[in-house]
Amino acid sequence: MSEESEKFQNPVAGFGVTFKAMFKRRLTEQYPEEQKVTAPRFHGRHQLNRHPDGLEKCVGCELCAWACPADAIYVEGADNTDEERYSPGERYGRVYQINYARCILCGLCIEACPTRALTMTNEFELADSSRENLIYTKEQLLAGLTEGMVDSPHALYPGMDEGDYYRGAVTGAAPGTVRQTAVSQGEKDEKDKKDESDEKAKEVDA
Ligand code: SF4
Ligand code: SF4
Image (tube, rainbow, N blue to C red; front, side):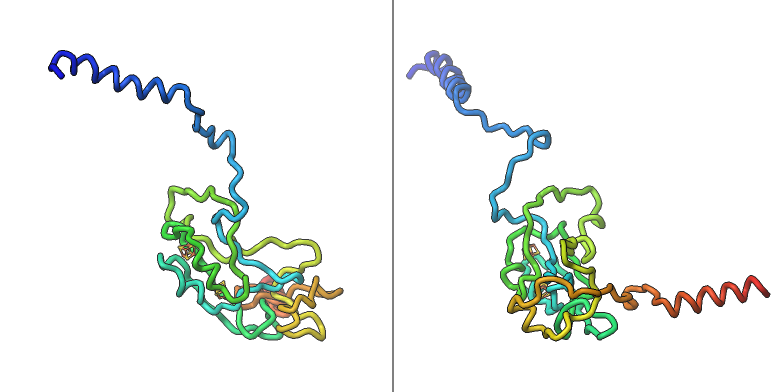
C-alpha cells in the first residue's frame, strides 16, 4: 500500500469504529439519579445480626478478623454477666469495627462466622473523604430492632439456654423483658444516678 493511500485509509478505519459504536445499545448509567438494583447476593456493607428477642448473635470469637485478607476487622470479646447480657452464650463482641478503607468486600469474613452473626447487605454507597468515617463501629453495624425485639443488654428468655436460641425455639422477647443498664459502656444504673443527684443536692445546700 502506498504512503498516500495509507494516509486516506487510516482515518476512515478509525471513524468506522466510531460509527459502529453509535448504533450499539447505550450502557451509560445515570447514577446517582437512577439507582441500579443490585443482584440479591451482592456483597455490600456488613451487618451484625440479632436473635429474634434482640440479643446479639456475635460471640466475639474473632474468626472473621482472622479470615480477613485485608486485616480490616477489629474485634474485642468480653464475658456476659446476668446483670449485663448481650448474647445468649458466655461471650459477646464488646468492640467490633470494620475499616472500609481496607475492606475489599470479598465476603470471606461472613463465611468464617460460626453463628451467622455477620452477613452482608446490598448497600454499596460507602465512599467518604475521611478515613475516620470509613471505620464503622459496632453501633453502626448492628441490625436495627424489629417487632418482638428488645435492645441488648437484657436477660435470656426464661427457661431457655444458648442451644435453644440456635434451635429456633426463641421467636421474640419474653413478656416483661426490659433493657439492662450497659454499665461497661459507661451507662449509670438507677442507684448511681440517685447517689449523683443526692451529692449535687448536698453541694447546693452547702
Ligand atoms: S469482606 Fe473481605 S476484606 Fe472485607 S472485612 Fe470481610 S474478609 Fe475482610
Ligand atoms: S462476627 Fe462472627 S466470626 Fe466475627 S467475632 Fe462475631 S461471632 Fe465471631
